[in-house]
Amino acid sequence: MQNKKEEYHPVNRQRWSLGQRIADKVTKWAGSWSFILILFFLLIIWFIINAYELIYKFDPYPFVFLNLILGIINVILAPMILMSQNRESQRDRIRAEYDYQLNKKAEKEIQELKKQLDRIEKRL
Image 1 (cartoon, one colour):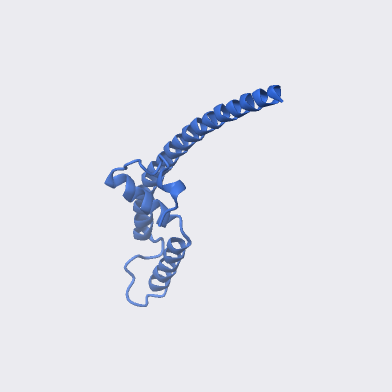
Image 2 (cartoon, helix red, strand yellow; image 1 turned 90 degrees about the vertical axis):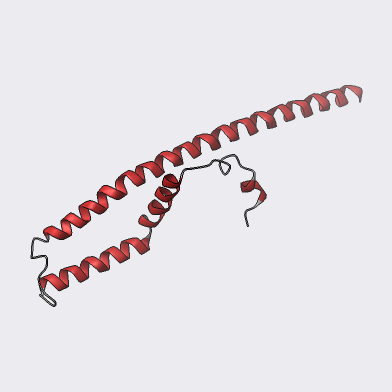
C-alpha cells in the first residue's frame, strides 16, 4: 500500500502508454544484478560449449553469432534506456514544479504568520 504522500503526488497521476511502461520495466530489469549475472553465465556456457565442442561447434572461435546476438540486445536496450531516462527527467521536472508550488504556498503562509505575530506584538 502506498503512503498518502505518494498517493496524491502529481507524478503518480501521470499516465504512460503501454510501450513506455514496458520500457521502464525492461530498463529496471536490465540494470539489475540478476540480468548481469544471467547474461554472464549464459556467455560462459556459450564459450564452454563452443570452445570445447561439448555438443557441436555451432559458433566457432570468433563467435560471430554471439556478437550478432549481443548487438541485437544492445540495439533493443539502448532506445528503451533512453526513453526511460527521458521519462525520468519529465518526472523530475514535474516534481520540481510541484515542490516549487509547495514552497511558494509555504512562504505565503509563513508571511501571513509573521504578519499576525507582528500585529500581536503591537497589541502587547
